[in-house]
Amino acid sequence: MAHCWKNHNGIKNKSIMKQKINVLVVEDNEYYNNMLSNSLQQRVNSILIKGKYQLVLRSFTDTKECIRKIKSKELDCCDIIAFVDYYLGAGINGAHIIRLLKEQNCNTMVVLLSQSKNIAEKNNRGYYDYFVVKDKFAPALCGLYLEQYIENKFSITLE
Image 1 (cartoon, rainbow, N blue to C red):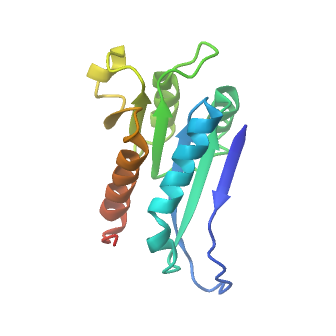
Image 2: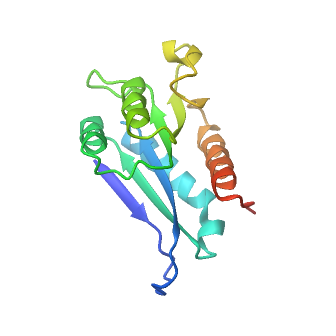
């Protein structure tokens, strides 16, 4: 199941070209996926209110659909921050998704998520930028990484 949230904040002035903040969440657990996606959305609401930016958050629980969209270039993968669970089921792990994203665009910032602190890719920093253990603090930490990404990419300071 894929979810796509585009936040337009009710602004109808078409002459203003909004800069896109592309966020990808790949998590097979629907509950955790929704929780993380909502947390990320809440984290950037202060910048979206200003009207210059548009959050394009794509959320996938079905890894095969995500892979299909990445390979078909249906996803706008330029300048994206991706939050990817390591254990995705169906014989697919986060490293596979990350490799596909990196092949499409080297400007992808990746936050790898896992309940296990001992995953093999944890020590291979070539595939991801940050590693987050999925505990009660993970959504907040992911929100901080998203803020950092936005501040670096757009040279702005979030409130």
